[in-house]
Image (cartoon, rainbow, N blue to C red; front, side, top):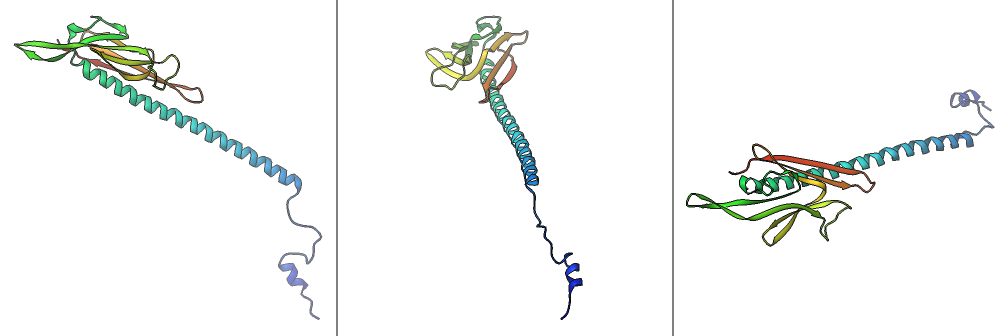
Length: 192
């Protein structure tokens, strides 16, 4: 009979072994502990990233809302007569009344009805948060909410040597309680 012991050793060492290969209980527990730490760190990073993304999305939406509101105000106020402002010299006033030029007759400017911008409590039906205000445009018997989520004193008008400065400040509170605030400002040249 032939003996092939030297081949058995070259393919894997000793022919027989009483030891079994595998992990001990301690090694499995240490591996599980390390995995728990890695998973917890990964989840913490993911949650922080999601909160940051939510904050940026809210900030971008507020930027767009503030920009749209300030552009709407500026578009109408550019047609306002400098001598039609009430108060005549607003200084961080949250209410402004004015008249717009509607045309000319016999070389004279024709002024329309009085339009008023003001801050009011949020109207029913609009999603709001406590203490936030809405910007309302009142012209004759027509009242229209043109902006929402303004902070108290978040709309102001100030008369300057060349026209009118306008500022709006909006705020949203994220589900986690973080408040996001954005401000937009512009300077407007008034008609004479």
